[in-house]
Image (cartoon, rainbow over all chains, first blue to last red; front, top):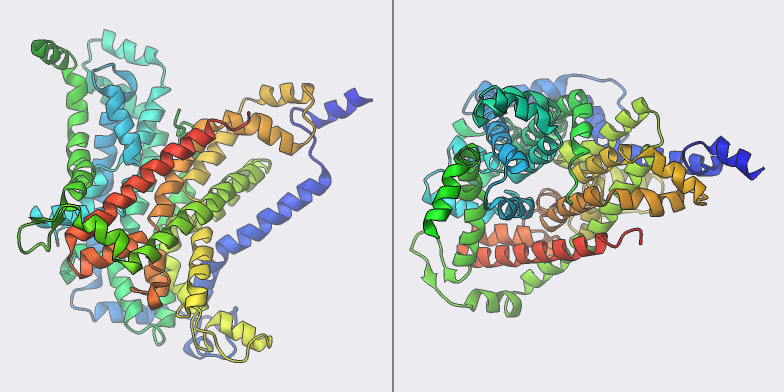
Length: 289
Length: 299
């Protein structure tokens, strides 16, 4: 009797139906809470002006329009520098910041994962501790440093601190560690030096980890827009420009602000949805032992 | 002795060369700022004149003569030791709950729950609109329509409401990288452990969670804790964007907003560095304690 019940439960312990229903209910509720502000932004961005100023406010849109997006781009194109300039700046910052971080962090991760050299343990524990010292936390001393290196108001101020970020290195190192040593040995026997082994064997086998670091880094750079570091209009990134527009007149530009929110959230979402599987695969190795 | 070190460095030349480009940026922009803040914390420095040594003055001023820092410290502690653990537990529980879903549903759920962490910052204007002080604000509109209140409430201005609202929004954004690590970690637990557990008399999913799942995930839990510490101790943007900078009567002040206030507005870099040092020390100590605690899970 007991035996049969256990067999029915299969590999895992018993899941009661009541428990399943409760858990599913909680997930659904939390999911709605999680998604609500995004849906709210989307709906608001399509509202015509009379619906935006309606009392009591409604959570649905009756006559959707693109007016808010049009007016957002109109305001943006009347600014001191053309809108394309902000987009160009964003691309420069995101691409350079991501490419150099991924390249340098994975190069450094390889010896940390697979070589034995003096100082390795100490170096890695410093890097794990530095996971906590993200640019948001070290902002002021970094700002002092940037000012003294004459980097304030250059692309460098937005890019350089992120190239040496430790999360990417940590994830790459954990991923490379589980690659079989045999493939590295084969390459070395063929006479390749460590640089060739890295580029020909290690890197091609780390694509999921590389993709993951690309996402995290891109999202960080996309969301990083401290006003203190850039004051020339011609060097500002897209996010700074859209925030300026939305903040300049919060009530009249409620709709344009919502449209700006929607535009800002689309690229990170697309990238994450496309690469999600790789991220989960990589995060499997992210534990700290 | 010295030649021995040189020999071993020469022998491992390739390792060091591979690491050199990364280490250059890492040391210059992550390690050096941390060291600099220790140095500047003992000075008065306004970025125009050279720094002037003041001894422990900044530290004394911080704890004895800065009432707003005490508010900031209290709020940061609240985010770190109340909101943080709730976020952390929530990240794990949601990851655990969606683990039983089918592959497709789990992917969709992962995206939905992770969204606020990656693009939450773009949606702050929506929260401002939702909690807006006038009758156009959605929360006021809804509550007035239903007859709960007769006059609009200034949600983001009134000291009573500022902090609770910031906590709600912070919790909304809390399923971040640690959540992804938990989702991934849960899928790699060896199935045979569960089977063995059933044989050993584990009856329900909660016993399974405590005796099998959690102990198998300690590395992910430690990593998640580090990430959670970063998020909780650096709460600032949400306060600046929703409650304003500074917030009414500093109700929403946190250590990082206080650092920003002295660093980017008053240009008292020495004093701002002192606060940064206190913040670093608090983060590192918390990390130590949490790692110790996590090693006891499942025993």
